[in-house]
Each structure stands twice: as C-alpha cells, then as structure tokens.
Length: 232
Image (cartoon, rainbow, N blue to C red; front, side, top):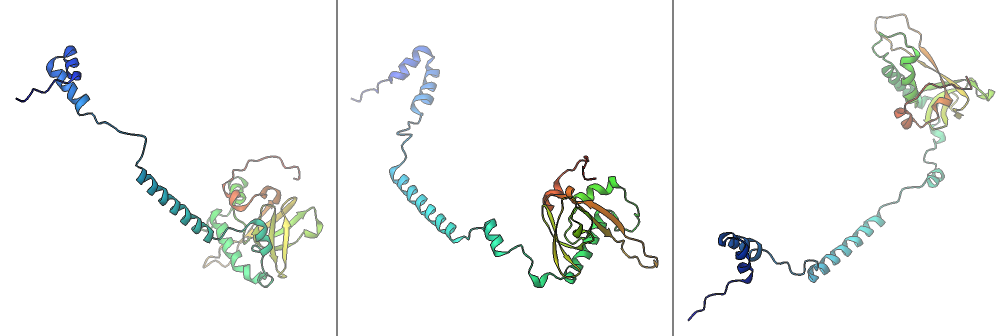
C-alpha cells in the first residue's frame, strides 16, 4: 500500500501561525518556488578561462594598433622641423594682398558697415568687436613704440601669436613686432557702391598691442574690462 506523503515541517509550522489557506500560499511562494542559488560568487571556470583569453587577445590587438599609430610631434620637434615657419619664397607681399581684401570684408561685416548705411562708430560699440576680432590679414602700421626703429613699419599680418605680430612688408621682408608697448594703426575701407562717384575715406583705428597679448582663439571668447593702462 502506498503511504501518504508526510507534511513538510515548514508547512506544519506555518499552519500554527496562519490559516491553512494562507499557510499553503506562503509555503508555495516562499519555500517551494524560491530559487536556490548554488555558488553565487563563483563563475563557471570554463567561461572565466574563455573570457580571459579573449581579453588577452583584445589587449594584444590594441597594443598593436597603438604601435602603428604615429605619435604627435612635440613642441621641440615642431620647432626643429620649422612647421610654423614661412618659407622665403612665400614671403611676398603680393601673395597676401587677397587675404587683406578678405579681412577688410570681414571687418566691415562685424562692424556693421557691409550695407553701406552706417558711417559712424563709437568706442563703446566698436571696442568689443575690435578686441575679439581676428587680425590675420590686417594691414598694420606701427605708430608708437619704445623702439624708434619700428615706427612706421607697415605690413600684412600673417601670424598672430600671443606676444607678437608677424608681418610681411611691401619690400617682401618678414618682420616680427612685439605687441607690448606698441600702438598699431589700421584702416577699414568702405565698400564701393555703384553709381557713387565720391569715394568715402576709410575708417582709421588704433589699437594698443599690450591689450592684445592673447592667442586669437582665446581672445575671441574672453571678456575684457576697462582698466587703467600706465602706458597711456
């Protein structure tokens, strides 16, 4: 004869505290259907070995790709290779005249002179524009400097560094002029309009190089404040 299955001890203990229906539900959900996790912190040894081999192959391929990629040049190597130097055959004033014409159009646009209607600009409106403008292609003339030999030096800016302006003069010579203690002058001509015979005089500006001792990209995003300058 088949013997009746004995009642589980956990179910019998639950029936002492709960009703038979509640005890059976709790026993089914909490005991019988509860998953039993064996070795939860120990991964499969075969899977771990496989992932380890894959990781080692990935690191090996990554190192090989990195070794094939050329390393960037250091500042010393760039100076030795003269990457930023202008060759002698390209130090000609005529080469940069189209750049200067483009720069004049750029200045007319940022100053609001491109439509030809505006003829007057004050310091409050033009000052922030001039300070944050790019001067590559500007035709600058030194009007004041502590070095007398630099006065009346005139040329197109081909490189605007943090502390200097590198210019090409009309005599096809490259001149490096420091910004500190130097005042520069430049002109922004008006655009010629059809049907107007009288040509308007260009607008003349003077900038103090000591206020421009920043790289051109940094100067475009920098906010300037008015302060006292001992050289003025």
